[in-house]
Length: 309
Image: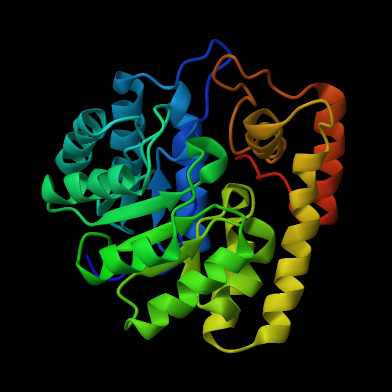
């Protein structure tokens, strides 16, 4: 795979009112991102509610995203699981559907240390020809992937890149510096929606913004401005997107995915992209008062509902 840079949104999983995967909504969501000019798609990440999907539903979502993309952009497949053999089950599906790479976290639930984490990534890479991306999300795995390990595994060809959702800007800066000193063996993508501008300045090659489901065009414009060295345009776009990100703080009675993904889905329902804001159990969707506040923030950010034929 050629180096994947730019905007690679983590695709949400829309559900029908009765909790089934909503394929027409998924097609509208992915098509809208493709039309906005995104550079890739990340299916089955945290924003996809992967932790709540059984194996059959994971496969169905990945097949659908790959089919809708139809080779227009690379599709990265999340293979997030607690243990190596379980990860490899999902790797085989990714291979079958033609994914451009797989994205794996450190093993979790069982307590692990540096040796186990390194063995985990080496085991994935040894079992597939697909590029392997490390997903650094310690809030979920309770393990922070260190820059030394990541750059070393990149230099050895074990890892192709890193999706950094750690929220640790100091660690990301150190990772970018060490990666640059090593000849940039890793492609670095930030998942930190409101400081993408800073990540670009530090050495990121692109972003994987959950908010990119709601406003893919904004992240594409910011990426193109950064490539052109127009940092004033980058700042203006990032400030607008940071204001839009306030939707995740609307539900003060919720935390984690129920607030973040719930707000994204509620915004997308308001915009007419997906049919419901239903989430996978046990997550409870946002209510109508929340929805009114989310809609107002979207409108203030210049986002209008899709025109219906």
